[in-house]
Length: 254
Image (cartoon, rainbow, N blue to C red; front, side, top):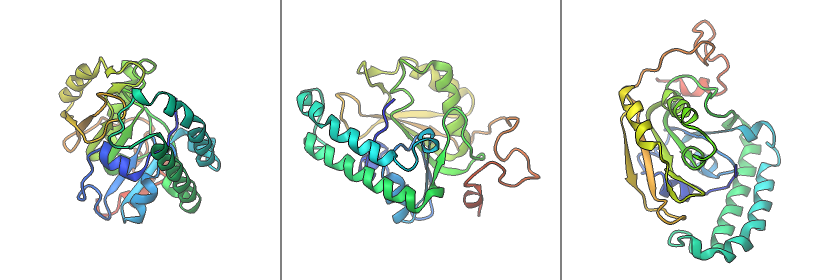
């Protein structure tokens, strides 16, 4: 699975983020964060942003450099296949390449300066307590890899994201990346989530790279009350914040 370095502005477009969503003090999780620059720039704007990714356990120091080299390597492939993509947002392959390189460098500097903001972990189990974040963002994993990750994984992952979100989970895109069609089990998953108290809707966004790949899934989590999991972070009230690397920030004033 690819690790990319998307920019803060790409996140704004992909997730239809408003100024209110990005208000100072708002608690936002990026899952999986990869080498994106969202957490770095959001932090500079006063957002309480955290990224989680399994790669932070293995390539923490060199992930940004690895993604930068891979981005340079793929530039010629982008040029060769430019007609397969929509360039309204990015402009052209060179602009996209520069943007991703700049984002990888921003990520690299920020993970070195603020390592506590980058937590090692992966779906479908994350090291955060219930309701840790106001908003959870997830791009280019669920649905994108629908031919590799089965329906059970998707359901478990969506419930986990809903567990740690106080308000909303936003997921982009809903298209399988190597088929160019909407994830086939999406409606069934939404029906299942709705029955558990997690209503959802799909909306179109002003961002498109693969043709037709411009839809966002929004889960409303305010009324969702997950069942307690044995051994889950925060499950033992006698050990406040046990196993939760950022609980000490997120539980204040909750």
